Image (cartoon, rainbow, N blue to C red; front, side):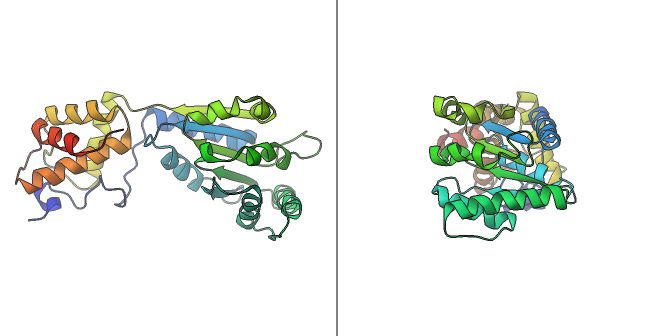
Length: 267
């Protein structure tokens, strides 16, 4: 008997690379509401949250649902590269010709955004993930790059996604002009205890489970240790299932979870 059979699962829903089962709690729904506002309004947005809080999941699912006849999403997590590499990557992602010099890429990007906005009636949605690692030089250029018609209108959405310290970076005096352009700033908090239970239940149900898997005390132990972080909830659920299966335990107890917590690096 393998692990999935023991716990009545079609697959393990707590593994990162398994079939995605999307849980949309209050934080997720509020973030999507803010992102929809940003898409309609255009301009700069900021989405932050601690590690494992679901930032990338929110943005990926939100952008995948944008009307392709109205929006062109461009995703980049190449946040540690040089300014010119950033320009080259962005130009290529937009479908603009890639040049050797930064100034040529600068103009190519602006021309392509203008072409998309005016000729194709499409709004580029440029998503920069892990933006807390982005260099000051790139941040300094962002406001200049996305200035159109003497700053009178925005033709693109630029969404910076990163850890909470990104807010501290943007509070620096040198970034004041960019910070003033941010029209949407949302921080993803963790799941509540109730939402954490719903998260586990939805994952199990989505994997075809119809039998009890975790005792109430086990769920409570997982939620206490995970502190509202979806990634940590999944990690502890998976570790508990692995330990339970190795010991031929059909119902995960709090003791099993405590062993999983001790075996896991929680940070």
